[in-house]
Image (cartoon, rainbow, N blue to C red; front, side, top):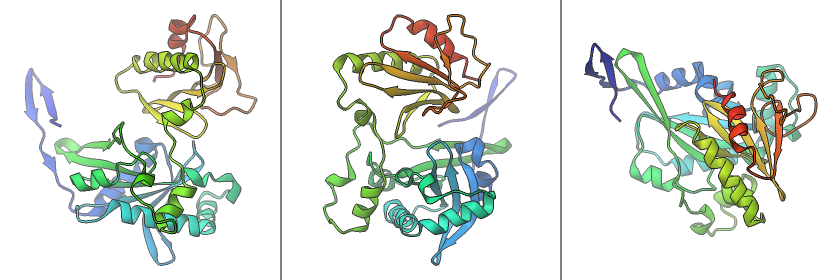
Length: 302
């Protein structure tokens, strides 16, 4: 990646600046965690059974805990440490609940947390090819995020995507009683294939048409596969799709009263329970109103 400052028809190169301490990375993340990740900050330097976790956060969309670790050097195993921390969380769930309730002044119950959506994020200026490859499993709840700083106080944060052909961790580990087996049995990383499983070809084609149309709205829209729906994000969720047997259920992430919908296709579900983000829901069984629905979804991009 090359970054330039554009001034008076001339490019000026921006030089990368190294972080002096891991703590510098941690301060940047913790002070801006909601803007960076959408997560809720819970605790810095959270200690559980003599283990110090750099940052404890909470994913309010998935109702799950997120552990964030910061590294300045590259001499460590992301898989070993990540699995160790996930196992620690599953073994001492009460400690995480207590910390959440004390810091947020709330009464979160163990049953309120979706432990299957727990994850560990490593944040570092760079990762080795081995670290990238060793964490490149579709069902391994460990993510790598690169952070770089440049002149003029410019910060670039780049979550590293897993490859589309990433294998399952279960294909390479066969120790039934190993820590990694214990973690992968309780923690679930969802994929597009699982949402499409058991659906007819017509429904798969319908989903693919709407997926492509949403992604074509903007080049930086990304998909994220949740337990109950597929999220489409551009900085934040703009729309969510639940693939059903006879059609799609689509939620648009706007508050009640914000959607301009002259055809009245979207239902206001602000007063009833629903899975996706936003207060507007559409039930779709064909592509007749595809362009119009895209015009509705575009309104969620701000």
